[in-house]
Amino acid sequence: MEGNSDNNDKLRRYISVIKENVGKISTLVHKIHYASELEFSDFKLEPELVDVKAFILQKEESYRLLSQKKNIKFYTNVRDARPREAPCLIDRDKLERILDNIVMNSIRFTPDSGRINMDVTIEDGRLHFRICDTGKGFSPKDLAHIFDRFYRGDDARRSEGGHMGLGLYIARKLVEAHGGAIKAFNLPEGGACIAFDIAVCRG
Image (cartoon, rainbow, N blue to C red; front, side, top):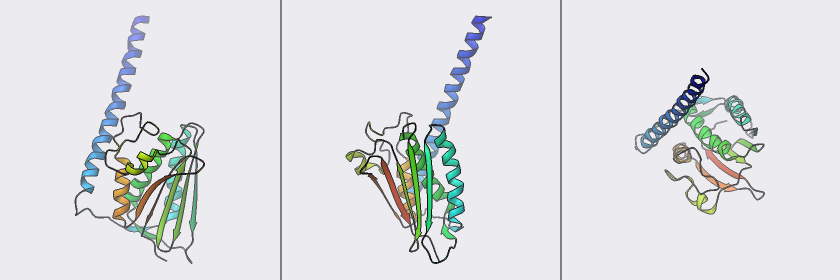
């Protein structure tokens, strides 16, 4: 009976590994397909009026839960510098994908007990994001290629899970589709930052 129990435990572990790998492959295939779609010239945004503060608070909740799994603190600050608050005209799904790709990258490379800050400013008709972590930061080589398709980075921030370097490439393409720009840099005290802005706001 004890032998059967050991075999069952092994079988469950094998099944768990297989499910995990299937999930990774499925995600990778989806990203490759999505990245290919972005290459077509007829790719279009589908903008809608969005309450940015409510949207960010919703995303903050999910990011905080994901960060807690690694004992990482996640903080968000939203500042609306416009004379009056008004909805922003954005492609909600695309902005969500941009943020998910950047924040998940930060969570992946921020050590346990680390910290991630997401600062959001609405000013002069633009929406500005700055996401910084307390990880090892980018190498000079990373900074030159971090948004290239299939670039995985050097040992300092290389994924251990077989990720193919499409997340930040997709983020760049979507930011540019919004009429914005994206950049990566390191903080003087250490840690990596990605900042981007999109021209979407009114009021």
